[in-house]
Image 1 (cartoon, rainbow, N blue to C red):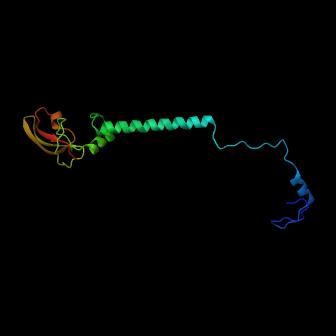
Image 2 (image 1 turned 90 degrees about the vertical axis):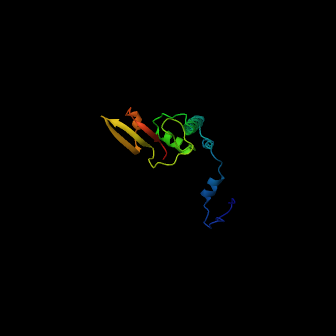
Image 3 (image 1 turned 45 degrees about the vertical axis):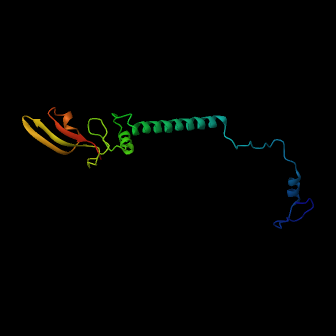
Amino acid sequence: MEEDAKFCKNCGSAVEETAVAVLKEEPKESMQTLPNRSEPPVAVQTVKAIIQIVILILVLYWVWYMYNCAVGNYPNTGDQMCKDTQQFFSNEGGNDGNGSKNVECPPTGCGYDWYCSGTYYVEGSQKRVSGCVATRPGEIYSSWSGNCRKCP
């Protein structure tokens, strides 16, 4: 506003002399301007950087572990996710129960169980197996004769 204005140009309100006097005053030295807070403190930036590095290391480890699962470097692990990853990325289709890969392995419908066909003896009587089993009979019965394979 101008010094001798009696009305505000924007709203039309009457201007009192005290208001004009207040506007003319210079800012007092005791009033300080607020610091620029556009950047967080160094400690906060350091903690954020450490967290980001830890997360990156964990992600890289997970990728490395899953890669090794996929190529079969961890065959005897109890980790179901590792087994699933290996089976997902396996192009051979399964194994024959002896640890060797079959190039052509038709699905058995047994999921992660074994499909076995053969015979074994218990107390002198012959038992026949043809179907899905959780454990290969050869691991339980020394008289096992037959084939087992895993092909989902």
